[in-house]
Amino acid sequence: MASKADSKQDTSKSKSQNSETENQNLDSLLELLQGDLSSIDPAAGLEAVDEWYSIVHKSKDAESKELADSLKELKQLLKGGKASGHEIGEALIHVGDRTMDVASDSDKELKATLQKLGKQLTKVGNSLGKAEDQENIDSINTLTESLDEDLESVDVDAATAAIDLWYGIFAQVRR
Image (cartoon, rainbow, N blue to C red; front, top):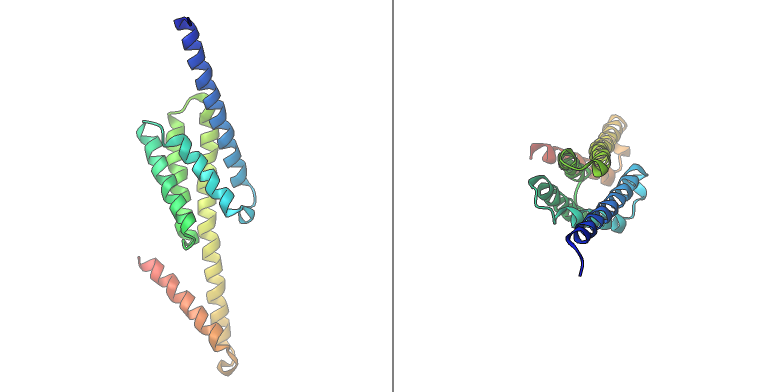
């Protein structure tokens, strides 16, 4: 029959192995986010969010529950396929903020990784919004340049598409 000391040692080993696995999963996610985001396979991105969600949703503390909820929202945006860069960016920033909250209460082994991950998520979220803004600005500039030319030579379909895009941008700003 196992003694209490053996039982405590087994529990300690189990927690250490879980912590090591969690840290490896977080390191993999961090590595994924530090690469070229445009080359990330959407299925791999969803899988990474799923793995992270499976780690944090079991936790009892409020910060981890909030992080799990934020990850669930991010997953829904990614799965839907219709979210704008701004929407995904805002969700990533929110996940980054929640990650930093969780990091502040984590043990030493996870704290540094979670802090790096939180900062990287916020950085990626901000860059997505800026990239989408730049695309919109370029599109508006193209439209205004074409209107400065001879209006008879303007491609009506291209101009209409640009105006629709412009309208969509203003509609998002009003929300």
